[in-house]
Amino acid sequence: MFHIFHERFHFFLQCKIQYQIFPDNIMKFNEAYSDLIRQLPPSLAYEAWTRLISRKRNPITEEEASSINPIIEFFLRHEINRYQKKVKISTSKFITT
Image (cartoon, rainbow, N blue to C red; front, side, top):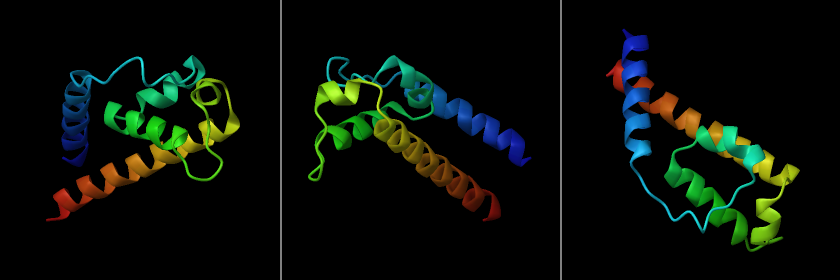
């Protein structure tokens, strides 16, 4: 039963994400990170971009953020892990109650 619910919830998220629109000219991650970006909802990808270029310590320019950089890859993987944990916790709370 959990598996069926999880599939439906994931499908709902994909449909919802597909229709959200964010300015294309603002967020310019390198294409090498497209697989990582697809694992995040557009709102979180946009938020990650904003957080990268507006950090207080060691700020990254848009050009640096658009290039291949191990810091950016690590940051994106961290954001994906946070998102997946959040989804897992929210689905487990729904099922146990």
